[in-house]
Image (cartoon, rainbow, N blue to C red; front, side, top):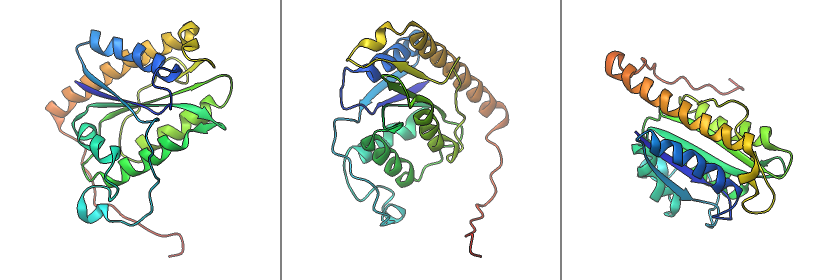
Length: 205
């Protein structure tokens, strides 16, 4: 098993990091290979809808997005984690995910996804919902924990005092491992589900 964890916080050792390292510890205990990629301290521009990726197979802006694409292709599970800004994921993370998911041509079906949000107080569930949408549109099963996956803390490291939040991270990691193993067994026995050619319609037609 290979799990890629994306830290969308500008602060490498902030509360998002606390949550991801709690998950990483469980993944490693379960025998998974893991890598945490720090996204939030990079200058990531948004998608400009140039569609060059359809020809190149990669984003026209050759930065951390393209560097992460191969890791995304190889992973069995993807965790995306962000701090909460105005009841939303931070802009750097959204720009990164928009380009990463759109510019990568490989099939993401049955890779397991999980999202995590960190905040002082509110906006966690809306951020959690926002991040999950990348998985659903890509045919990626979403792992559940024991609550909406989140930790609380304002100052760096305060999330380490959120006992319930950290338990949720451990539960989420164990559930992801179970789901990844189950999917691997299912693919071995049954293969992937049949996929029909994509039908695309516009609302004006």
